[in-house]
Amino acid sequence: MITSTEVQNNNIQRSEFGKRLKASMDQYGPLCVGIDPHRKILANWGYNVDAKGAELFAMRMLQAAQGRAAAVKFQMPMFERYGSKGFAALERALYAARQMGVITIVDCLRGGLPTTVSALADAYLKSDSPMLADAITLLPYYGFRSLTNLVGEALENGRGVFIASVTSNTEGISLQSAIRQRGDFPGQTVAYGIAHAAQNFNEGVDGMGSVGLIIGATIGQWMKTSGVDPSVFTGPILSPGYGWQGAESKDLQTVFKGTKGNVLVTVSRSISTKGPEIADLATATEQIALDVREALTNAMDEDDRENAAHHVPDSSGSDPALSAANLADGRPHMSI
Image 1 (cartoon, helix red, strand yellow):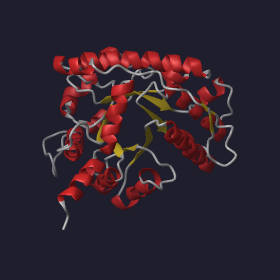
Image 2: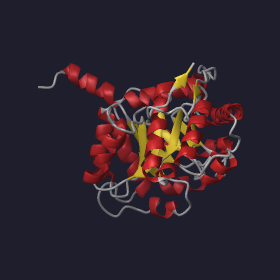
Image 3: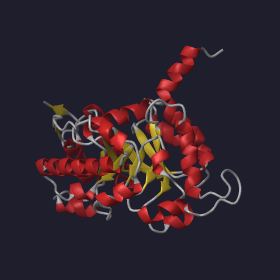
C-alpha cells in the first residue's frame, strides 16, 4: 500500500526541475545561453574546428553564463558531428556545468518509439547517466504517447523535458497547424494537442511544472493558426528565435502576452559572436538578459508584472577559472 508520505515525496520529486528552474529564473532572469559551437564561430575564435575546439568554446560560454543566465542549452548535434570525441566533449562540459551549479538543457530534439526513446533517460536523465542534464528537448511526432514513459522517468528523477509545439521554422507551421482528424483533440491543431498533453503533466503542481514546451519567438503571425495559448500553460516555455534569428523584444511581447514568468528565451550567436574574451561574452550576456527580462515583464498582466518587480536579477556570480585544457583525468578542474 502506498502511503500519503510516499505520494507526497513522489510529487515533490516530479516537480523538482520546475522549481529549480523557476528559482534560477527569478534570480538571474529569463535568459538561457545557447552553447552552439558553430564551425564559423570556432574558426573566428581561433579554435580548431574539431571536438577540442567545441569543448574549449563550451567552457568559455559556461563561464560567461554563470551567475548571469538562468540556464544553458547545449546544441547536441554540433558536438555529435565529431563522433565519439564530440560526445566526450559534451560529457565533460555537462560535468563542468554541474560543478558550477548551472542548470543544463541538452537540445537533442529526439523522438521515436517508446522502446527507442527510453534509452534517452539512461543517457541524460538519471543520477548515473554519462551525460547527465537537467532537461532535454523532445519531438512528439511519433505521437505524444510515445514519450509518456520517458517523461515519467524524467520527472521521477527530478528532471524535465521540453517538447516541440510551435517552432520557429517556417515550414513547421504547415504540420503544427494541421487539424487533427481522429484520436485525442479532434478538430484541434496538432500543436494544440501537444500543448494540452504536456500541460496534463503539470496539473496539480504547486508552481511551475517540469514538463515544458518549445515555442518559437518568431511565430507571432501564426499564434491564432496554431491554436496554442502560452498564457495558460503552467510549465516552462523554451523559446528560440530571439536575436540572430530575427525576433525582437516586440515579438516576445506578442507571442508571450499574459504569461507569468515561465518563459525562458534561448540566445546563442548574439552572445558568442562577441567572443572569445570572457569579459566581452559576459557583457553581452548581461545586456541581452536585461533586454529579454524587460520584454517579458512588459508581456505580463499588470498583477504579475508587479510580482516580478520584486525579483531583481543577481549578476554577481563568481567566474571560476575553468579550462578545458586542464583535463588530465578526464574531468574539468576548477581553480580558485
